[in-house]
Every structure is written in structure tokens, then in C-alpha cells.
Length: 373
Image (cartoon, rainbow, N blue to C red):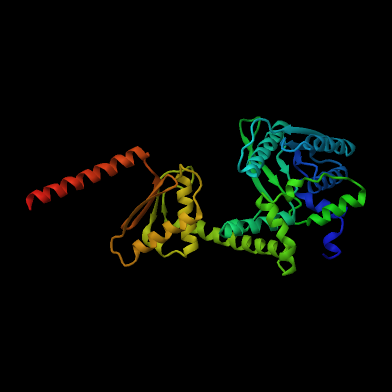
């Protein structure tokens, strides 16, 4: 690790990290007490103290109740926030915890509680302490899961979190912001050590039961082969650049091929011949977008979408009047000659009734044919 990669974050750098948030009315800082979020708390407090006018800051600790030390860590964050002149709240995850998928469930609860805190205080942004190391680990996780280009872009600096009700009967999006996403974890630890601020150590971050912890343990080995965190993040940035270009092409295709609106769901009709001529990735995404608008059974899995796209391509090869009828994620996809129709599938009871009727007709036809013979 170079000296620059382990140097404390300067005041000037902190100013640039938070510069685009200066006009927000209030910000929620997600602070668990670990090194990353503690550094977020310290750097944000320094930045705000240097401003004559700026957003109110509220530090929020979500106590998941999964470790006996978590309550004490929340109290330590409260003491530090008080020293820095900031308000603090502790929110708790109560009730039964799932036996499987615990990290995912804890994450969902954490964001739900943070969004609720933002709504209660009028904050337009929730800040988390994701780092460059987290970004690299996410790339590895998604590679292992077989993600496409969109997934390998990994974590964006800013994403929507929820809606904030406004007095004038409107709503404003609450944004989740990761101002430290390009900062190595080592620099945040160095920042805290330089000013003598302690932080908590969560052993679950090294628990081999969890995928992220296992991949985190592989990082030093990968770095020895030249695949360090900065290289993985560089891959994500380049893919994000390509992603933006592909999405422009998909938007153009949506406007050129569709007979129908692309908002609020509803039947989408595409020109089948023009769809066939699209570059594969553009066609795949256009199809996925149309299905997502009409889906009633959850998100569309990439592998299943790819299989459907391939089936459509095969059906159109050399066929004068191609036909195909499939369902995916609660959506009915029908290729009929010059039209490719994507719409909400009828209830399964109706599908089964129609299928049974067809089978009955075929049975009667076979019996009649047998009698004629």
C-alpha cells in the first residue's frame, strides 16, 4: 500500500466529498460505530462546522440487537456525536430475526429505519460510509453470482431510498448518498488514528458464514496477483460508462419500436422485425424493461430473460409468420407475425382453464378420428 493510500483524509478533501450536499436542509448520517461510519461522522461534522450556513446533521445508529455489544456501541456513537455538537438517535430492530438470509434482512431493516428517520426530520439525504473496499467486494460478489454489466457496475454514489412527504401535498425523493465510495478504508482508519478517536470492531465482518466476509479474506491474495481493490473498482467504473451508453441505445429503441406508453405499466407492443434487428444487449434490455413494467411475480432473473430472448430469436429465424407464447415473472409474451406483445399474464386459474379446454378439444378430436377409422 502506498503512502497516499494510507494517508488521513484532509479538510480540503472532506469539503469536496460533501460539496454537493451543502444546500440540503438536513442530512441523516448512518453511524454504526465501526471505523468507516465513525470517520463519516467526524468528516461530516468538520465540514459542517466550517460552513456559515448548511444542512442540519443527525447521526442515527441502527441497533440490530444481534450482538450483546451493540447497545454499548450505540451509546459510544451518541457520546462522540455530542462531542462533535451533533444530535443522535438510536433506532432498534425489534421482533424475531430470520434463521437464514440474516445480512440481507438486516440491511433491508436498516434502510427502512434510516428512511423513516429522514422523513421524521425532513432530511433529503441519508449518508452511509461505503468505501472503495466495499465497492471492490461488491464487484466480486456479483461476479460470483453471474451478474451482467448492470450488476458489475456495483454501487452508485447516489441512489433513491424512499419518498419524503412535503407540506404542499407533494413528495420529494430521499436519496441515499455514499460520499466515501472512492476512499480506501485504510485512509479512514488513518484519519481516526491521527486524531485519537476510537471505533468499534464488529467480528461479524470476519465471520466466514457470510459471503462478503469470505471474499474479504481473499482480497490480499487477489491483490498479490495484481487484482486489488482499485483494479476491481476501475472495472466497475468502466462498465458504468458502457452502461450509460447502452441505456441511451435502449431508450432510443423503446421510442422507435413501441406502440404504447413506457410508464405506469400496461400492454407494450413492439415491431417484431425491428426488434429482431437490434443488437443483442439492446434487445435483451428492451425486452426486460417491457416485462418489468407488467411483471406481477417479482424481479426478472437475467438467466431466464436471456433464455426468453434466445427463444424469440430462434422463432424468428427464417419464419415468414413466427409464433411464440411464453410467460415470465407474471408477464405474457406473445410473438405473432409482425407483433411482439408484452402484457400482464391472466390469472393462473384462467391459464389453466384455457389449457384444460385445449387438451379436452384435442382429446375429443383424437376420439372422433379413432371412431372414423
